[in-house]
Length: 399
Image (cartoon, rainbow, N blue to C red; front, side, top):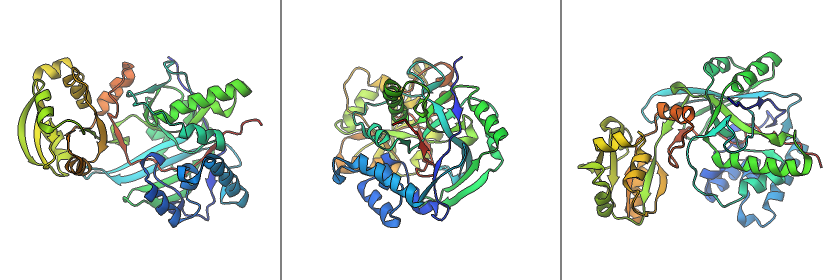
């Protein structure tokens, strides 16, 4: 069985004089222009000034981001560690079911492997992304700015990460999530963490596109500088694949060009359909309790979609797979949206229809890894989202 390398690195971090709640940010792909403006208004050195180059900033926006990073390092806004280390990242939060949870993972450099080679595995099919934004930013800055989220199949990794490291930051974000960052530089503990993550396969939970970009970038660097550079690895947050470490929400399906009546007709052979009444945020839990999906109409009403026995018998136990199978004979536009309230408002404003689905189970995620399967696109939404700016991994490529 092929397993990946997982290595510490001399990280670039914000100076301790800067509070992380002012300079860290949500992932680039969930931020609007207004969000970026608000973060920069909060602090001019917020990481989005580097991580979110915007088209309105001109064609040289990636070079500008690189220059800004260099300027911040020169000015002491950011400081490089004196020795390689891992970064422990803990999040404490209340999940959608009202349960208080605490997770812990470790950020380091995970090996970039060829597609299909094993060791680091995708867990779902990805939708096409033509933009080269992350690749252009990596080329310009020579750094990994945003972590991929990986799930380790090594039993006991969580126990290895529980002990605290050197405190680096502790803050609550706008959603009430507590983010705790600690450095681990003790040689023996670093070696133990590296060995544990490197002892088994890692499943990519979030950041498939970033990992694919890292592969493209690695190949470019190999063509110029050969093997053995820091581009052979990429910044990754790794947590153990166990229930206590994961909070998974659903990503619901939007059918913007298909009326609710038409969609119900298409789904009727595969689902029993009964009225559900007005749809509200409580339906996030109700679909789980009922063991059913829910069709959403523009008027805000819903209909329960209970999978028929033959559908359950013939199709993998994933709501996304159930819908793909039921709609396999038609071409239909589909989009994806997290959050019941967002789904209801979007259908009300834009028309069409939607289907609320249930979160993917840990058992199905593990089956994905064990059987080398792929889930339908957008099958999992891991929460809370990792913050960017807690650590930067420099690539230190030869000139």
